[in-house]
Image (spheres, one colour):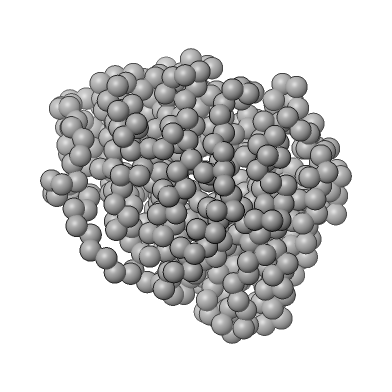
Length: 458
């Protein structure tokens, strides 16, 4: 599916937002931090002040909600759904979906059993669901919550042809590098602010006897995130938007420059845990846990990915803010990059219950529950920042809200799913091949352009 050129991309002050995030993260001393949590939402829903939105009684109604979330992330979302059940009387079933979720939904719809609501992780997937006639517009109650609680940029991402279809329930800051503090202390390494400093830090960590980077190359989306951060910082926001819309080809010199920079890390086998072959067999969760297990000799000293890394760190004995710390993705060009992502609730089977769930997910009541549980950021500006479980996440959430409309959305998530969101195909597969052979920059560019042109219908 080609994303219409009329889709608006929020304009960004990248340097300003990145500077704000850097200052926010620098202010995090670690641990759980202080701060009272007055009026906090709880999974039990006992605190009346947490109920900011009225929901209808739905006794006897049933709903199915599909999402690709697994593990802790899925369990935490189920607690949000449990609160909706408690407040309405409806029964909600979580349906585990597979990537690409559009294909999963297509099979469900063809079989006559679509879920009522789906959590879509790509802007392109929302547009595809609308084009196929699957998605249903949000009702006035959900739209009222969106207008009250969300910046225009986040509302626009869920809008197609002037109609609101998506509630961005979950956001992600994808411009972060997490590190094992013991490894850094042993090596005498410091947090880098530029790409060249990152390379120096990597060498320092390597010289101490620890492999610098853990890369979850088995999941192609992690590699697209690496590319997008390098590209946004190096080529700038205007080029980023042009490439996202396929207004410039992937054979453009700016893409060559970004891939060449990536090869400075991916092309050094000793810099990546397990080398390229090992990375391509490492799924994202393992890329995190292997960075924070093994005492002062983990498999790697650093791992790149978004704020949601905290969920996987929570599966180890490491504590965020002490054993595990984070710094903004370093500036490759003039300014550090700030890339965001997110998951939107979209109604597939319109009903009073489905509309009520969308309304609930657009409220601070729902987001507040999952905020407390960690590994989650909400673009909902009405969520009390004190609900987040530690200073690191609290500051990231505050930076996201303070940014307003000033962010860039994940490029691959804006692309047609055939190119930017399908395992084993398109950008995911080509970047996996490039991780294995980072010398073939020109070949990777040609493959990327051929697949993009086919997916965008050019």
